[in-house]
Length: 506
Image 1 (cartoon, rainbow, N blue to C red):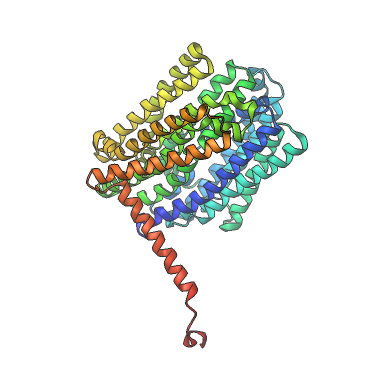
Image 2: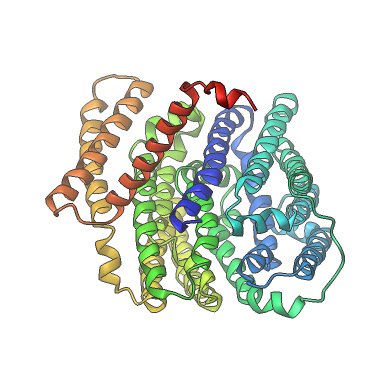
């Protein structure tokens, strides 16, 4: 299958499931924010952060190791599953032993039971069918999309139901466990696989997974370190406000990028022996993704005040500045998200580990320094500054892998940056005018979204025309749109044309 078509199919399959999941997640936040308190969300944030770090401490990227393997045998899959089972047992054992010390560390004995249930959730997530992921190598993304969507949908459904009944943080904790169990079971139903115990191919899998283990560990530490540090210092209510803001800000960007990243890796892995083609494919994919996703994050930052008022209610007004900062933080990551699939496709997983080490040493001091000097807002700003520095470093790493100069990478994002600047100026101006007009939050939000979106796309298109209609993300996205339009017309034509008598008679 053509790489572009394969990646597109994967991105739309996984992305479609993720979009629906994000809509459900946004709806869940809206409902749960009215049923639970900031303190409830603070407890959930601590448990989630600890679980995420523990999962990363034991994550060997086994599924990616199978995808990257060229001559795959049944014993490779069995070995990966056995290693996943051992990992699940380690996660459960850790939480059994560490639940009390962690609860004491965070000064809340209620966390003991929360940590134990969270450990079971992490174990079940790790026991999903490896064949579901392996199917993506042949560009079959449907099973993975169903598994990921079902986990989120079931967790949200039960979470809201329990919240309506009990109005306790346990609604989210138990909902997540049920979602993990359901997703694990449905994966084996979608792609039949009977696990066997085996460690025959341990060395081969570890050769790929070793550095990915350390990379995944540090990547998660980088992602959750702010909440782990903040949770030790500020009251649980303030942590809950920050965590909800972060959960809201992540939806349009990072949550949208994850399925695209999953779809890119199998496609790029097929080009790993042709660096020039890999470089061209990366530049087109990376610039197109940033052009589509970055304005969602920046746009959310620009409309954070009315969005929070409508989605969360008046008790969450304090979350507005954190939504603004976190949304820009995640938007920055869209400009260099291609580094991981490229490095994995080329087998350069050690480079990803080095990237994460550098990021930790940049991020932790800036977050701690910001927290000490500016409180919670200072910590959020320190995290934002660290992300900007890390993105610049990722451009340098891509230059090392693909021989693409940093300036050339930035040029491919020029149209996107121009559009974002124009959108920010216009939306800020319109928002300032509306501030004294007495218009409600809902019409204000609707107007700002329409004006911002129209300004962004108009500015990008105008800049593209003024620069000579150069080949790049605009032309690539136009090709994608044209291809899907042709497919829709073809399907409509087939549906409208009745079969001939000869076709009916066999």
